[in-house]
Image (cartoon, rainbow, N blue to C red; front, top):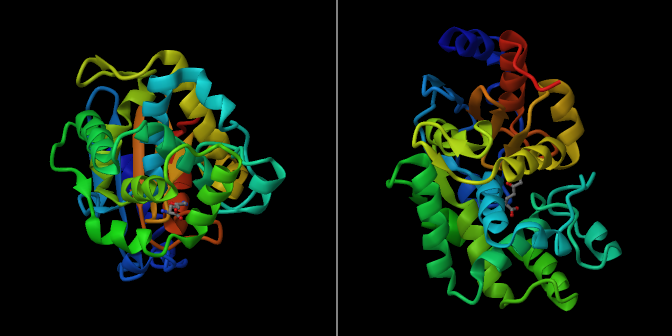
Length: 304
Ligand code: DON
């Protein structure tokens, strides 16, 4: 695995530092674009690391996978009354489709869908209590109690979340947000501001490679059926309007974040995480996607 990782990552060195940093969140705009890290963790616990694999970064939309897991555990298929599971074909923060479709987001991974997930997770609790519950889930599946929220990133995002506020307010007008918009935004933005590294993210996603069962902790996290559904939604919606391109190039279910991280699940094999902050025009890591394409090619891991 180490050999596969090194061969693949060395082949894309020219892409590192290219693309655009997510400067619409002020605290993310300062990150050095030259970072590049990657990790692979197999189901039997073998870890391979490359470059900045132990450097913490903002997981951003990758957190939506944890929220979806918890919401499916809480309310199961009831979720699909409030969020669809169709690719959006639009930008992750698009407003136009939401109005046309009367406040029901296309899927749980676009911002509108994840705001509904936060609303469900809140369940009449304060954002603080809700956040500590989600964080303890992330720490649990990562087996790492040091994982936390970067409060500087969270505050920076909350104070500039005008687009997300408009999505949440619109959904509230359609009765698809129950709690106060401010509480939903605080929960959503704080979850995007969780800091993790490539190795921790591989560990945290292992249950999705193991049909919902974490083979290292020997613990069932979610049913096989729910794990299969989460992986399917990652395959079709994990990269927003570039989901088709990502599936064509990598051929595996994955979830990206504007912090430059991407986590990919290889069912029954393991998890691959890459991180490089320069983004392509769809908001997905440019060097990270290239690295995953190279890893998939060298390893021949795919679901197709
Ligand atoms: O709400 C936002 O815009 C960000 N906190 C998360 C967006 C994101 O990560 C989309 N990813 N590619």
